[in-house]
Length: 325
Ligand code: F6P
Image (cartoon, rainbow, N blue to C red; front, side, top):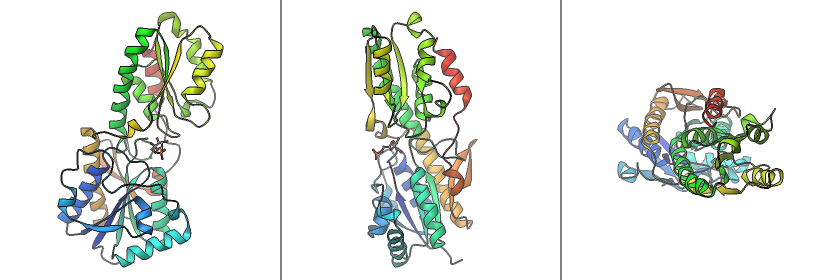
């Protein structure tokens, strides 16, 4: 295997608070250990169109506390094609980049794995997504900040819900994963969470209404994971039909959940996994994601990290149920 001298770094998919801290960590740890670093702009799109520039420590100074990503991001369509990936490979060779650090979620790490396999290229993933849906790491970069943002929003919604004695359905992000909904519901004292992981055998709304929530409380908040078919609007409509005397409102938090200054936890996670990425390269690792499990930096094969069924701890469902009476 040829010695790695230059490392390319990119952010891809939905931006997440803490991505800048990860860019900073990879750049600084890389330079500290004698590598050259190149920043690649607009995710895989910038690989295909050759938008790259050398990064020094100055390029990443003062960014640890900024949300978003200074490298920009994209959900690249061209990288999904064989021709696009071939072009990306040629650009990497042209720029003398020997290894790639990809900061992103499930789709981005799937792209990195495919590329690594196709071109026998060293790809290292960092878990950068608010969704927390990557296997093999306890948390993903951005998840903690977003959960805190949701909690603050729900605290505010509760003020108006209580004043008007209303039922609020609050829709949160998470794509096909309920981590944000379940844990922000616990953190904000919501009465229920409706999550994709719990929807196979029971009607979650019926279960919640059967508990007679309005007998003991005049207002309540239900956090709903976003979903194409049955998001907060769907559940609100059902309650309006089935319980016409209830005063129901919907609040879809949307993209405000992705912005803002990263929490200390996300900055630390990004910093540790960024340093871990450089260590992985020095050890000759490839096609792995750097995660943190039980406070230890771990290397997880990309094929495992992208498994679609990271489970929600069933105890968390019980905790919410017991505390919402
Ligand atoms: O993957 C992160 C995420 O914020 C998901 O929770 C959400 O479903 C999706 O991105 C939204 O993507 P976009 O910003 O492209 O609409």
